[in-house]
Image 1: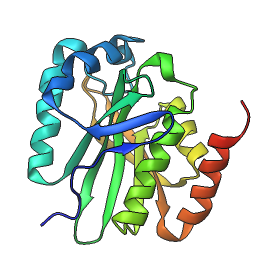
Image 2 (image 1 turned 90 degrees about the horizontal axis):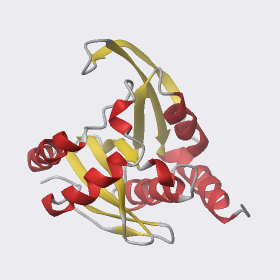
Image 3 (image 1 turned 90 degrees about the vertical axis):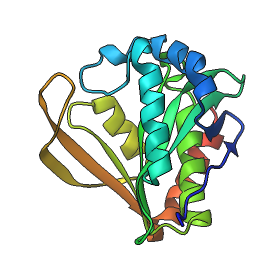
Amino acid sequence: MPFIEPVTLAGRHVTIEPLAREHESGIRAAAADGELWRLWYTSVPSPERMAAEIERRLALQQAGSMLPFTVRAASGRVVGMTTYMNIDNTHRRLEIGSTWYATSVHRSPLNTECKLMLLAHAFDTLDCIAVEFRTHFFNQQSRRAIERLGARLDGILRSHTRASDGTLRDTVVYSIIAGEWPAVRSHLRWQLDKPR
């Protein structure tokens, strides 16, 4: 029995809900906001490939290795996707990844609150010992966002995977461990509450 079950998490700026096929049109529109699939160092599907990506994520959920989410802004508009992935039931570890948001919500409180809720659920409810984040070596925006969360660099997996364009990806690995979570939680709450 997997230790992770579908859940909806709601905050002031964002709601994270289990991914469903009926979210496809909203997810396609979110990806089109900034044409995110054109960034060579990301794996955001193009709108015409979104249905297949949703099916892929749902199949991985059935296999017990992923819990995919649709991300909604406070307005209710679908603005992206995120997941619990590489779920390790035995050692109670997981990765938060395959995350992307519409360009119009970048530099808003949305990502901070999204990660705060996902981390709180992982550590406080699921009793995880560690949560990992991975990104492409060249994805500087993602690396800075992960570091702002308080995650620490574990290392770089060189020539780790092959990207859709055939290039080899060096994967940068970060993590937050259970003992660090209280300080990280305080930091994320402070970021959300500070005047903008």
